[in-house]
Length: 400
Ligand SMILES: *Cc1c(COP(=O)(O)O)cnc(C)c1O
Image (cartoon, rainbow, N blue to C red; front, side, top):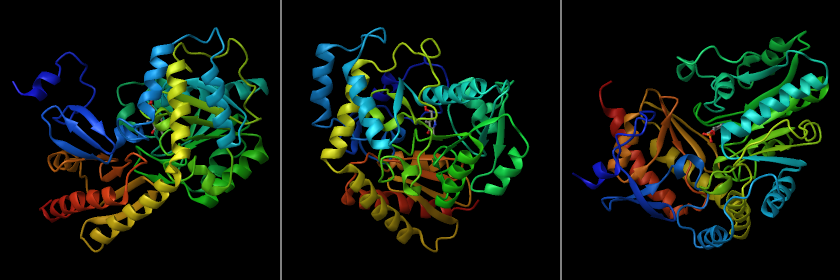
């Protein structure tokens, strides 16, 4: 039996089409499997490992916290929870935070805020605008908000109260909500992740902000994947100079420790009252320490600047290598959230990249997604291009 087979298990549910490796440890942007083979990490555990692996500042801080207290519970004050909330308020320009453990939970809280915002105004059947190709999670409500019928299949009936519109089309949004007094919120990702790295345009973000103000709707921006410095600003919507009313976060916030948060501005900060919402693990001392230290290290080490600089370098390298190749469509994204779209489905490239010593993912069938740790260096970006682009070219040269 190989080390990989020993590490795999027949007892977990069959929810993932897993690639045939098991990782044992990592250092920076490199990871090793249980057989000792090394990989360049272009995926960062799906935009989670902000600081890479075994970070010399994060690990001792977490060890210190584990030796003090891991979990207490929300019946008591949690000092690191206050500290992380204060920091997120400072970085976002919003005012109050609710903590949970995952992205779907943060989005679930946002959806509950939008519903109660409506009920508080006398709207009995609140409706929320959501988007084509959106991904907001796998709970029944967040799956209903998600714009992917493939992953909804088999789980109906979906939760009602959603209106779906196309991206970047303000007239379509106005038409879909015309004369509808039940609308309470507009909900989207600044850059769709699972949907294929699809950015909302700056002017569209500004138009929606204006519309939400005019109509007293909540603007709710899911920054679970594109937030936390990945695009070169703390939150991707900040490129448009706007603020949301509600902002769910998770993925990169704890650099690998599960942390979710929903950050709210004045319009949404006081909707929840005692008894309206809660979760056992949310905001626990270990998770909060991970969030506080992740942000502190990002600031100390200039990781926003690094994400912008290395991201631009990586995008240019990819374009340069793929320009003019038949079957290559485009490179898009911002900072270290990058999609390489081909003209046909290319899921097999994730497996071939593994064989070549690189971790990536393919999403929306034909988009190679790169969301590496924000500590990626330009040399590592060059290495990534040097491994990935020949695989893409070879793939595209094969008969369909
Ligand atoms: C991953 C993701 C989620 C769901 O987060 P989980 O932690 O997997 O529940 C929600 N929204 C976006 C934009 C995501 O990328």
